[in-house]
Image (tube, rainbow, N blue to C red; front, side, top):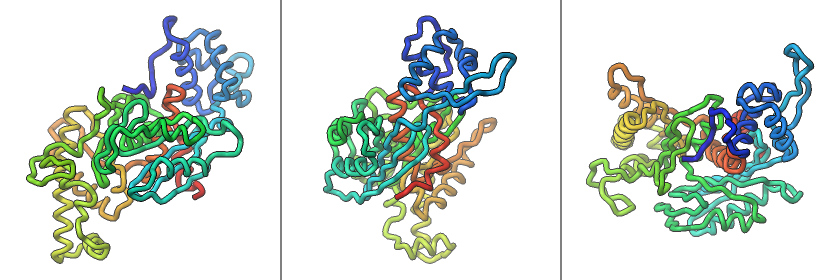
Length: 396
């Protein structure tokens, strides 16, 4: 598991890096209203240790003094906050038709976004590098790290082990992109995991548990349990699109009966034209609209069955829909049908299982990729409330 946040107090045996994370975490959560004495009380670390770590974080331009706060019986306290003026991170989303990249501050404020068309056969890494270069300020070292969200199974060193729908196999994406971006550290994450991380980054709660269901040309899941991203020993956690649901349909992967044979966006929309989709959403009852509705209901039934099993297995009730489905016209219909099916499967005495859209919609992927990069660089998942306030207002 990848540690995102920790509620454990430091001890004498704690490593310096661990205590650095605790102090940085306290400053981030304090949102400009925390002083050194507050950190001592919250973490249990000695005052001298906290003072030493804060000095180091200030020197590294991660933390800064923001001014005097109110007195609590003694001299005024010097307040601390994240240094939002120094570090910059770039989050990249590699989509099927385009690559989107955004530059963020340490506090999650989006400064600029670029989108570049991306087609099958393109040099994906070259296109991603071009997007990053457009966001890189002139001064050297301006970008601390790059986070990239991609489809497929991603290993810890940034290699895409397999992406069936893209014909990628053992692609060293992180290494190659870093080389094309002046050796800036690159941290690669599965796209479903990225959206799940965006939900964590926006939450001020500890121990968040959420399962993200990515629905587009493929289906995957990002699983966060008690504040930890679960990827699995072989990094295959969440590869739910090829679970056998019992149909006789052959999948693109070569197997028969995969979930992706009935519940991907292209399969559910099928040959329905935009006019047919519009008629269906308007309540029409002609043959084409009924056929579209049946495909959506079939996909919803299988998704509801899967979510019920995951809820019982993982003890999670908060499921989030992400990916291209979020911006598709049939998305709300699928969400409604899935929740109606889920409502029929609730066991007495247990909380209902629900599926909702991701908090930031299409912006969730780049924000999650950025949060992943920050976590990998500094060891802590920082709350990024600024991303929700600025995601829709970045320059394109």
